[in-house]
Length: 284
Ligand code: NAI
Image (cartoon, rainbow, N blue to C red; front, top):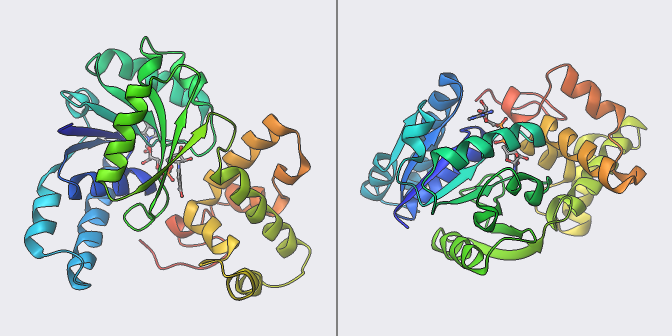
């Protein structure tokens, strides 16, 4: 494995590109908007500068990592010669399926195509390709350069070779991999979203402020971060998309998106990325 291609340069894509480059892979990242690519480039540079400041990396290592990443609007160029393509675009099954159909003809036939989806079916994504054995879920966490977990999601036809390769890559990036069957929300979103949605319902009902609900989980239950702050970091639009998907799959009211979440998303309060969600955030 020498080259990894990342499709989508938002919250997750830029982080995946960064950890891949830090692990020594050549990386090409692409997006449909130039603004997203510019933002990704400055976010990666900022993260790497932070790593140098905190003594986590030398200036030379950080410079070399940044130099290994190509930011390009040309998807063909981005996937050329990549042995692994990691998709991190919006959480929408139809959009992902049409992207994978295109990637299937653009990427080298031997390349593995991975999705960073938080909840959608890897099997449904794989079935639009001629290489379902090489389609797999690689679910990273936000912020990617800090969070240690990668969920590796196998659908019925993912080959053992594909699973072994992506596990090796994840571990080479310094992550701990867990194996999960292709079920809605996998191991993480299926549990985490319940907590996040219930916390939102509690805000709606005036039970306590977002700060106090988060403190309850942080100080009372030892969670490193409360569910509302996590939701703001994930992005409320992403949380809503996941909740709608899980509700449609499980028909369980615990996944029914609360009105406050729908209202925030429709008014553009998406959390950290837009500067406001359940909290006010510094502009990125
Ligand atoms: P985001 O909204 O921050 O970024 C998505 C990016 O994809 C945007 O820059 C958009 O311009 C780009 N894009 C959309 N369609 C595209 C296409 N056809 N080709 C290339 N680029 C395209 O979204 P985020 O948060 O990075 O999420 C991406 C994926 O990662 C989703 O599937 C989400 O569920 C998953 N995920 C998100 C996490 C989070 O905390 N935000 C955590 C783990 C997974």
